[in-house]
Length: 162
Image 1 (tube, rainbow, N blue to C red):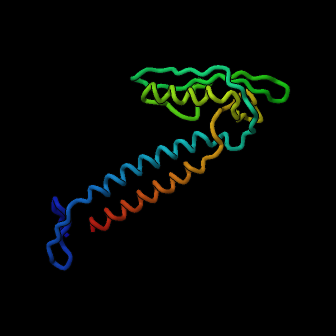
Image 2: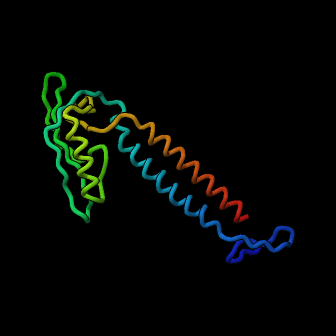
Image 3: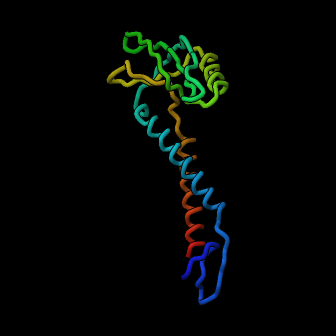
């Protein structure tokens, strides 16, 4: 089998020139990036999977950052566990970081609109808490789809190569 710049030659001595399947290459790269981002998101949420949940009250929400580094939503919230009050300020709102300030402001407005929100805390250290969703079903579904797209695109590329 001799490779040309356009494809492969060599099935029973016939000359076969197939164009490079750029669509499969693009799908493999984009789906690979999506799978990587979703995996990072699931790993970041993993510790809170077994944490307990309580109600928290939003005290303050602001947007920090700049155009170069991106924008984050900082939320200060208060919650009560085992007779103790905790006040936590976190810059890891469920969404973000954001490239544009307007997107961060919209996310901050959604937090401001909810005076009460679920707070997930570590039962061994109640001062360690997060305000992120427990449900990761959509992320798992997206990860499965992204991996399936990578596998299909790589299979198509392998068929073209051979």
